[in-house]
Length: 418
Image 1 (cartoon, rainbow, N blue to C red):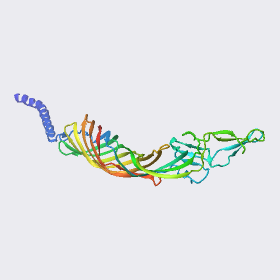
Image 2: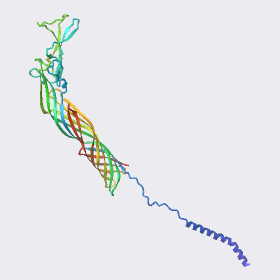
Image 3: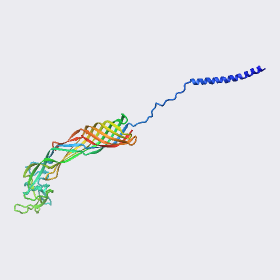
């Protein structure tokens, strides 16, 4: 009986034990399978650096002040007689003559013949070698022996040579620097390119050594008082016409015949003489030279930078440059004669030229922020020159040398990085 009860108990417990130990075996198998699988890999970010954008290009906008362009004015001037075509043969009678300080015209006197019907007919007076049509500029033209002189002036101005330093001026510049890399902790370099515009301004007023030629025509006043200087004739009055016996001539209508005569004297209608004289002085002629225009400068070259700290930098740039210049050259000759108004001859020329050059810039730059700052520095620019000529064989030829050598100055402005 005892053994029977033990056998029954084992029979009852056997399934439970099998289930328990069977589950444990399954769990052990699952754990074994999991241990045999490779774990998932976690990405390794340890080799990645933090990316921060650094501006590589700097835009500079500012002013560029430079010493002026030098000019050398040379040449030989001529001041011709303004009305040389009217300087007619002195033997021609009763023709129009124009001078620098006056004029003598054909005789304008006439006779008024009564037609008997209340009208008059004007006929020219008989030629007598005189004229009532003239005018003159200055009282000195009347001589003490009752003669009147008229003049034309011309001048020759040889060997002009005047130097003038042009006016210093300020222009606008625009430039960029592109960073090309660093060389050590403080040193870096970049490529520079810039364009600027400045004025050309040079002028010179100087007395010139000149030989002035005076051509003089002399006229007879016949002892009469001339009109006042600065006025013109004819100024006529009507007077009776008398016959050979001194009696008034009566017209068909029974009224006296009258004629218009000059009320201020007559002058000969042909010169008594013509003369010419020359004199050299430094007072009669003044030259006024003026050169004006503008020029663009294109500069390209490397820039070396030394950084003292994160804000303060020193830049040096050296390289070639090209100048494009446009200029107008005016040469004015002014002859002040003893009588009459000044004689002014103005000649000019316009041109455009390309001139090679080179530059050196030394600049201190201060960065206020990572993007903006300002700069100030010195400028040296050395360029070539060109010749500009104005005039002709008629009025002389003047040449100026426009020289861009040895220019210096300052540059300043603001910077923008991007």
